[in-house]
Image (tube, rainbow, N blue to C red; front, side):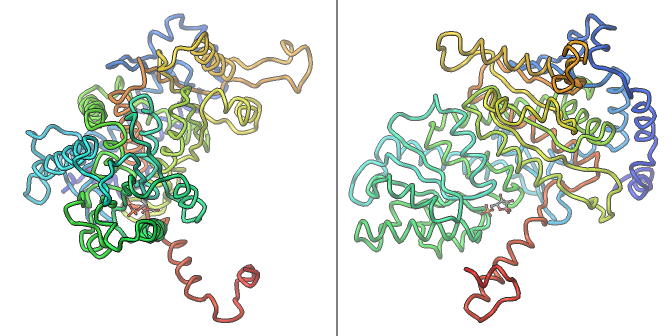
Length: 530
Ligand code: F6P
């Protein structure tokens, strides 16, 4: 039960609340303030506006903020009881109220001897049992103890899943390519477009392939269509009706559906419904990561995330990297009017990170009704997009520098590259810093020798996240950082960040359209042309 003061606060409008109002007044005072002037006024601005933590440096000196802004934003977080909500999440309270579920992806990276209670049951023994099941299976596949139906060693993994059952594990396997097992090739199939599965089936040998069907619900149309196609292909190629038994495994919460599909129950890797799809790479859904990279690297990923969890729980709010990134996001979205957020990793291995983050952020906070069912009167989740630098520079950075919208950027980079080739890494990092500086300083009409086309307005905010290197441990930390950022923003916007009803209507309509096929002329004009 929330305290009375909290109850009355919840029913009043966030925008009328004291902390929000104080920020509105502050934002008016900050109007016209230039980030470059803030630097000129405070030669120690970088020193005062960065945090170093466990191999990560967070530089927020180019945000359009002062210490006062941080103070007021922290007040807003306190007013919305961030600490209380954070504790509820970590301790297994059912904060996903619309679905009546706890939110416990953090339990998946906790040491086995800790205790996390859900409905008076400690979930950690279950978490540890599945981790051991994944480890044993991974080692048996790698050693050749587990073979295909014709006795050949498995050397190909095909993960079939979509959304959270694809984007997370795929992003991680791409990001950690240097750790990829030399004798395993990994594919990820998600799209229901038959081209996706067909192009993979063309390249693989059925005798040495293991298909992983990754689906929390095991009812997702795209995944079931791709899994069925793969199964039929396998049976046909191996002329063996039972072949799926040796060539399929499943990661799901739906044991009955897995069994019905014909997957050996011993090859089913379970997880619980307190793991959201987009937060599931830490669960059994991470089996493709284990098989691609080795269990030890999956464990390092979990450890990195766990370290970030502990830091998020313990660091003071005004020095807490996930909290600060969230607060700057709120400031930019609600007080500076920025409708989008770019995420630019200066690391080719992180090329799927923006796509992963799109689901994580936009499926979590792309909502217009509060957790209490009231329509919001303020903006919530921004459009998130990105591409690796330097590629993005030659694509959409024109708009970032000279477009009419101000789009804050998160730049992410490793200090050390996994591939030291000539001067490449120096060039890469120089480009990143140059972009951040150019966004901030801009170029005046005078500097542009009177040519208005060459004027850069400047004063465009960005942050830099600089890691020692992108390895399994730091990647775990990076992902957890963004998970917590999104959580904090959801709390401040009074949202339930853990449901996703917005994806349902289109799914239902697709079913209706499929069912209506062949029943004569359709009211939906385009359908008559298929
Ligand atoms: O598209 C919505 C969604 O429910 C995502 O939240 C989820 O990650 C994805 O579909 C896949 O769901 P499942 O793992 O149940 O197949």
